[in-house]
Length: 114
Image (cartoon, rainbow, N blue to C red; front, side, top):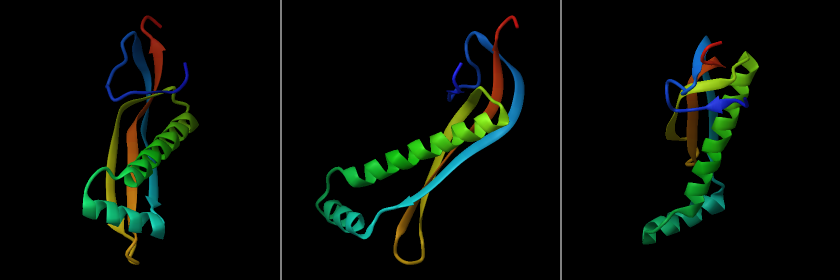
């Protein structure tokens, strides 16, 4: 089985043989000056913020990739109870940074009956 990542605490047909511990994947990203300016203009007029949405989606995917890598490094074949946490902060230079952390519990799953 490839590394399975689920938001549930159990997986039907499998049992947890070993809990390896918490794992995390954190990514921080900012928009460039042009993206920030265009985003500000779009926000002024309302509507979808596709640039921001794309940045958040890519940041989330990168955090999930890092989570998977960290779980595999521990010898896990699954991550249970995966969640995302996100926030943004000012870098101190007027640039907004978006951070997303994916976290869960790295485990070794085996089919029930083994």
